[in-house]
Image (cartoon, rainbow, N blue to C red; front, side):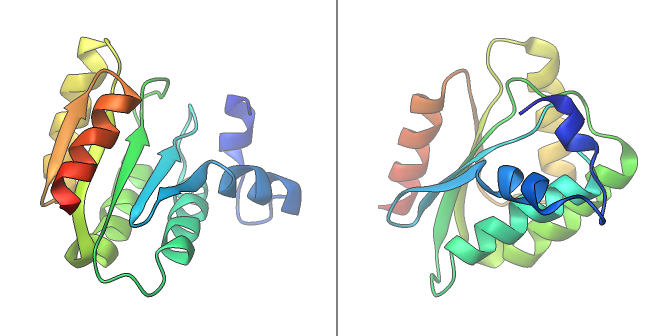
Length: 140
């Protein structure tokens, strides 16, 4: 999926919604992965979090990994929507492992944003495998 898919809106075609929802999957019991789109919008955030919530129905506690290694810094409306969506699930979150890759700028921006958003338990990683392991440890 290209960054153009991230520019959708509420009237986006069903195929775009489906493609976005496929970026969220269950890795194992109580552990999910979100592959964020390069350009986040309130629309893309809603579709991704709707899918995460759908997959986590019935779970009182879960964790997820979010891959931010290829994203651009989100704009203010997207950051606000992200804050609201995280607040809705935060009581059930055991941990969030954030993959930022080797980009020091993205790591710094992600740390500031994560604390402002209100994650209770987070960690930052250069690889998906590291983030998955951190989530597994938090779920034990």
